[in-house]
Every structure is written in C-alpha cells, then in structure tokens.
Image (cartoon, rainbow, N blue to C red; front, side, top):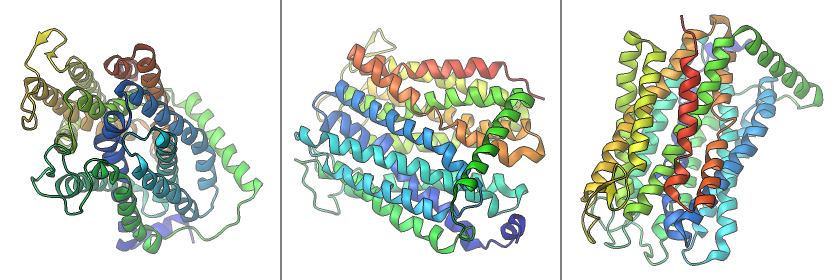
Length: 456
C-alpha cells in the first residue's frame, strides 16, 4: 500500500495520538527548560547563580550538540523505510529517566550536581531525537495538502499542554518557600518539604509522568510502517539521499538556503532568550514558583496572541515583512529586559528595589521586566508562525515535504551554539546579564541575513 493511501486511511484516533505527542513532551520545555526547574537550578540548587548559569548553559549546549550530530543520521534512517515507533520508544526512555533524575537536585548537596546535569542532558537528547521520528511520521498520516494543518494543530496543542501543566503544577503543587502557598494561594495537594525544595524538584518527575500518560495514544493508535530490518544498505541509501537533497538545495534554491541559514541563527537567539529569561528574572528579583508560574502563563498567552495577529498581518503585508518587524521588536524588547537590574531600568534609571514580603510584580523593576517580556512574547509568535509560512511560499509545490524537513533540521542543528556562547561569556565575565546578551548576536545576524532573502 502506498504512503498516500495509508495517509488517507489514518483515522481520527491515529491523528490524535500523533498530535498528543506535542502535548506530552511540551512540559519538559515549559516546566523544566524555561520557567520552573532551570531558575531553581541556577538560583536554588547551585551555590553561585553565575556559576550555575554557566553549568546549565554548557550542559544545554553540549546535549543539543550531541542531538544535532545524531539527527541527520537518524533522520536518514527514518526516511529509509524503517518503522519509527521503536526509535521513539527508545528515546522516550531517555527522556523519562532524565526528567525523573532531576528529583535529586537537593539544595546544599554539591555532590549531586553531576548526576542532575547528566539527567538533564539525557532528557534533552531524548526529547530532541524522539521528535525527529515523530516528525518523520507526519507525511504518512495525512495527505500533502493537509500537512500544514496537522503541523499547526500539533504546535497549538503543545502550547496549550505547556500552559495547562504549568497552571496545574504552580497552582496546586509547587509552593512558595516563604509563604508555603501555591500560585492560587492554596496549600499544596501533595505534602512536600519546603526546606529541601521538594516542590521545585518534583517538576522533573511530574513532567516524566505527564509524558508517560499522554504519549501512550501515539503507540496505541497511530499507524507506523511495517517492520523492516535495518541494514547498512538502508542506512547508506538514506544518507546518500540526504546528501543529494542538500546539494540540490544549495545549487538550485539559493533564496530558500539563505532563509534557512537566517532562521537557524535567529531561532537560536530566540530559544536562548526564552531559556534564560526566567533564570535571569529569578536571579534579579528572587522570583519563586508563584512569580515564575505567572510569568510563564503571561508569556504563553502573549505568544498565542502574537501568533494570531501575525497570521492576520502575514496575509496582508507578507511573511518576510512580518518576520523582520517582529525580529526588530524582539531585539529591542530583549535589550530592554537586559537593561533591568534590581535597582535600575534602562541601564541608568534608578528605581526602588523589591520590598521583602511584597506581592508578585509589585516593584517598578518587576513591572518593567514583565512589560518587556510581554513584548517578547508578542513578537515571538509572529516570528515562529510567519517563518513557516515564508518557507511554504518560497518552496516549489513538489518540494514542500523535503524542504520542511530542512526547516525542522535548521531549527535544531546549531541550537547548541547560543547556550554554549552564553555559558562561555558568563564564565569569562562572571555576569549573568552579559552572558545572556550573547543571544543578541544570533538575533541580529539572523535579521541581517533575512533582509537579503528575495521573495516573490
């Protein structure tokens, strides 16, 4: 049976199983990488925030480098006709084990630092490489003219999954160590020891359990290719096809190649700002789970609104115009965020520091930080949404699936670069602010290359 025939017969349960992978995996990125565990690691588990940020950045970059080196080979294997679910299952084991290992980030016990960092690295590799094979399943599930819809639905469902998991954990489980109350002002549903920060450490196991529950429909209902044994010929064939596709892209589709290079750079900067923005805020203002939970929800909602508005503007002003405008706003807002310290905004304007015992976002610095962060969220949505639209408008119809494979690959192959740069600069300057500013280099470089992309 042909791939198109199988795609036409994929039932709703099979499509739902595929979409729920994004819902299952998103808490790792939302809760662990961005808003809850990463800030706790730097400001609670590590003894020195600048050193903690350096270690976190190096580990993130190193794990993403390993994933980037393996992704092309594994992607070629995935395209060579082998079933994908066994690979997804294997990398899911890494993701779950890695997230569960974050429980051992007990404050004050430096001997556990290597175990925690190794656990996080394993989880990053598992998440990134499992996604390679779930993405490869997509063309066999649905007809080509509906691929964009399925991809968009998966992206949106993942966003909502991150928001729901964040609301549940911050609102019902993780308590502020100072007040003993959750984001909703309630006692935690699970009795946890605030002295050993069990609420923050539970983020990893919670995300692992969430993944285990919601990834099951993919394995139970989503169809896969029939079993086919792997051999050297199959792998070599896949790698040769990858090499031919890259050569053709560079030789015959220069505008698309330039766009993918630009997107590779600004996507690295975008991801770094999100990954380290919460860490910086927690360091400057002492934010705990309550403030970080609210912060994450606000940014997620802002990103969703921005994506919707960007789509409206995209059809009227063009994809490139929207991306360039949003990137400029994102860069300005990122500089604004980095201009804020505990007692100043815009680098030189003095403001009152956060008063002990004050409520969330009560100080002028916090309010300015939140305002700039909302602008970042509003700009990020259009950047992501219109980047995908621009590629669809640039590529020839018969190359859509192939070029979207490059699009996914370009978003990951150098994802290690910005975190490693942040780690290096932070280590050299002993300053979290200067370290995170390295992400601006990637954003500006991506913007300058994008301006050279010719569009129809």
